[in-house]
Amino acid sequence: LYNSGKEDRLKGNIEKSLLNLTEAVNIARKMASQEHEVKCLRQLSMSHWAKKAPDAFLALNIEASNIAKKLEDRKEMSKCLSNIGMYYFERKDYGRALNIYSQALEQAEEARSSEDEAMCLNNISLILMHLGFYEKSAIYLENSLGSVEQSENTYFMSQTLNNLGQAFRNKGLFLDSQSDFIRAIDFFNQALNFLPKADFKKTEGKILNNIGKTYLDLEKYSTARHYLEEALEISEKTRDEEARLHILGNLGNCYLKVGNYGKARKYFEQAIVLGKKLDSTRTLWELFFDLGQCSEKEGDYDSARSLYENALEAIDRTRVQIIADDFKAGFMRNKFKVYESLVDLLFRLYEKEKRIEKAKEIF
Image 1 (cartoon, rainbow, N blue to C red):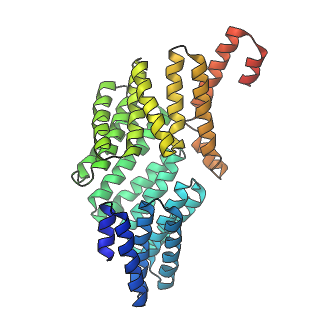
Image 2: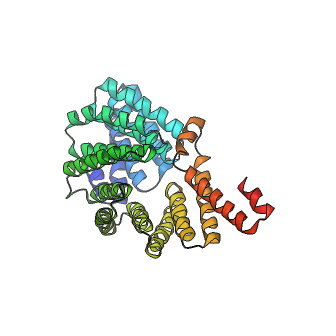
């Protein structure tokens, strides 16, 4: 039942997975085998996560972690705490997520579980990357490589290399460093080489998207489009809407950069519709900003202003959910361009109309 529940979830048979794993939990309890119960509870939580039932996911992991603590099973403790950290990360409670991931890392180190240790380091790095601490993120990921190699898990190695590529790409953006972009592409290509492509088409598409947007940063637009169009095809075949959202935005930027505003607008508008459907405020702010850039380049200043204001609203919705002030500072690093563009636009409107209301809006 335990193995069937895991396999059913991987195949997308979530209801069947829930039934099998719930029965497995019941049998473990009848056997008074807490060693089996904790594993079944954790797998049951993952099926609830796949069903988009986060509160059930959290409750099951708390229950499992309490049993693991009683058993002094540090490896299971690390896995359960990592899941609990993931819950708070998705809720944008980054401070709590970081604290819980650090606890999970401590348990993994004491259990001498190289794979769980590497997973924890990856999770911590992703929070730091999301909050704008790109150099720290890269350090955590590079430190995890040795543990990943020991685990001999080629998929996990691919994921770690992909995350390293993202860290160096973001660092390249922040420092305007071409060498970091080139290093990022190298990590992405290594990630593709380690990936068992037949079984992980969605992941392949995401890595291709990362390569494409890094070539976009390097202003190699035709090369970027090649990778992005291949990634888009994979996202459509695998019905990966979240990946498709990011790819559409990147393709829009390819056309924006070469002055094809009509085609850029088409991609941005498709992405915004999808972003609203997925409630992806993390992505919507940038899409509104990019579409605003199209409007501004085309001379439609009213539309540009409205879109910049939509971008600021999306940024504020995400920022207020970040608790620690230090995290807010990191989060804002790459978002000042929206304020700068809106202020510049309002100043030009003031220069045109010379109305005091326009000057007040700038301040």
